[in-house]
Length: 588
Ligand SMILES: *[C@@H]1O[C@H](CO)[C@@H](O)[C@H](O)[C@H]1NC(C)=O
Ligand SMILES: *[C@@H]1O[C@H](CO)[C@@H](O)[C@H](O)[C@H]1NC(C)=O
Ligand SMILES: *[C@@H]1O[C@H](CO)[C@@H](O)[C@H](O)[C@H]1NC(C)=O
Ligand SMILES: *[C@@H]1O[C@H](CO)[C@@H](O)[C@H](O)[C@H]1NC(C)=O
Image 1 (cartoon, helix red, strand yellow):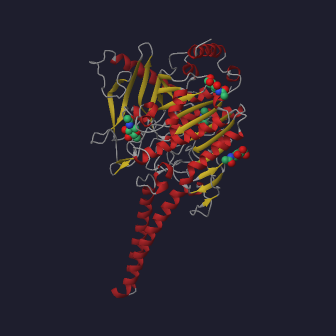
Image 2 (cartoon, protein in one colour):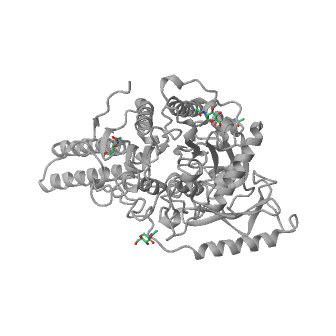
Image 3 (cartoon, protein in one colour):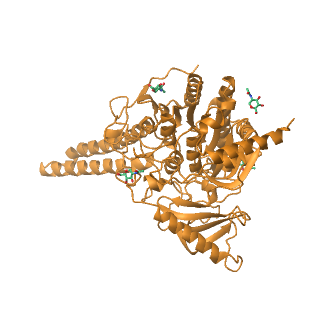
């Protein structure tokens, strides 16, 4: 009888031979095509997870996935912020190709009521699998646009991009959703509203004064008018703050397919509602195959955590939120087990990018931890912003406990699941992802990703070269953010590090690191310390040139005017701006 390990390698070789013979034969390979369950956390750092080395935070369910599956140790997001990273994930293409980047510092889609979003002619893996007969669903965060011209054209809606079922938020959870101190948007919106109110009040006072003078009135008689103007100014100021809050709250909404289900979300119930939907979706489609993308609202600020998990971790509210998300992962895996679907489902877990170092105030850290890696969310090139967890589990097919150190990309999920589902990768456009299956099975040693480009908005900040014959992973930085002088390796102030302007440094010669020896990017190499310095620079420069030749100009969806709030595009379930409704029954 074969030992388990031998039977693994036997199976792997057999599958490898089959794969080589027939590269997109998902259906024939395993008897039937697997269902696919993709789990994506929001803003989770690679250092926040037990199986990636965290010893004090409890993530037993993610760790269990890792024990039973393949762990990718150099798994890279195509961008260090949500919208572009998610666009790349769903399309298998650098976000610059679909125009899902900005050039002016906006970075992500700012509001639900903007006209930008994932263009209709982009093909997601969901669209291909749906065409191949998969039941497809998205539960959770989208953040890739909603409307183009009217509040219900839903031109960028998940249902237009291959999902037959959507339950979640078209935008994102934000600090502002809970009047959180780290306001991303309300502060920005209130400022012009407040200035407008002041200008209006000043004009009214001046008018009252002038009218009083003209009418030959005494100070005593026009004083009441001035008081009235001051009161109006105060009233307008308060009204503008209310309006700001209403608009921001209207953006924290939950949708069921095309209709608004809850506005604003009742946050304490959201996790339970999402789990209820996941379980209903899995039960409804257990005959398979299905593709379910669960895109968690955890662990983005404002760290909405239910009573059961508050105060339980050793890392404050952030740790509580991570542990709650891990619990949700466990609940979802339990549903698969209960339906007997574990062996016929490929499960994947990742985060859209690294943890946010800037999410802090009053000496509390409300963002993630990126372990030994430098930098974090929002930084184009530094490893901490883009190196994320990546775990695949498929019992009976993928070897349990395998660890892969090769560079891989979140964009690789696209060709991998398309081929497993028996689909064809589009031939009419550049696809940057590479099929991961041979690497996961262990039938090849090296990743097909030889070069990876690391963008910040539309500008290339760094590039990675996996020099396979030497086993080296070189990283060349052309541009890096200028950190706050306190030396903690972050930018601070509001938001994340910018991609251009005065707050970035341009390097000539570029900075060079060998990640295989220096994963923390602590020691930049020089021609004196690294004999291959010039050779590496030249090779990478050539790869960058080759890459640039494959780009064609597209409209940038994240620039003004497509990323500017348009009141008429705002989904609202009441008379605007009173968007207030709850059509969701309590989860049992
Ligand atoms: C574990 O994660 C927490 C929360 O982000 C972090 O503060 C802590 O430093 C991490 N511990 C280790 C050993 O990585
Ligand atoms: C969305 O619509 C599809 C098709 O009508 C339906 O099967 C699915 O249950 C709906 N999803 C939700 C969340 O109601
Ligand atoms: C699932 O696969 C594992 C690993 O091959 C095997 O041990 C287990 O018996 C399978 N479970 C079922 C229900 O087939
Ligand atoms: C989608 O349409 C835009 C605008 O016409 C065009 O620039 C872009 O190249 C198209 N993309 C694909 C993948 O065909």
